[in-house]
Amino acid sequence: MELDHCTHQDFLEILTDLEDFWGTDRARAVHHPMFVHEFGDTAWVVRDNGRVVAYLFAFWSQTEPVGYIHLVGVRRGYRRRGIGRWLYEQFEARARERGCARLKALTPPINSDSIAFHERLGFTLLGEPNENGIPVVEDYFGPGIPRVVFEKALD
Image (cartoon, rainbow, N blue to C red):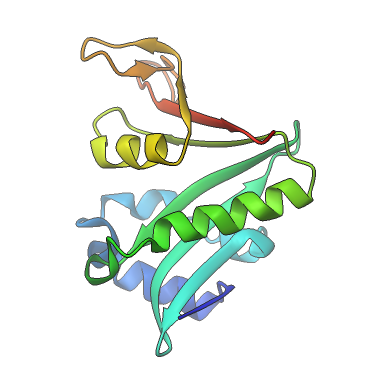
């Protein structure tokens, strides 16, 4: 397997196979081509025999020394091999090189897999507990749309 920058062809492959990465195509709206075309230095894929098996779309904040991870996807057949963790570690290493003080990511409060994954990686959850006890930032994604906001200090 190899880590490489995401090309437009890789992006098209990801979009075609979204259900294999996410179990649904509902995440299509957050797969904007700007991550490949405008933030290409932080849009990465992992390939196995030429096929995209995982990807990370991220960027560097323009307002603070923060690396923001927007999306990480791993194909169903490649999960539980540490690929998602490895992608985060690669991004964290580059964030440290750039002088970032923190990493940041977010997810909907119903995404328990993402919450557990980020907690295992040492992220803290910002905000106040919702009715299920999950810390959320209210209205983060718009009126009445809370998000779990993850943050990890890079000491």
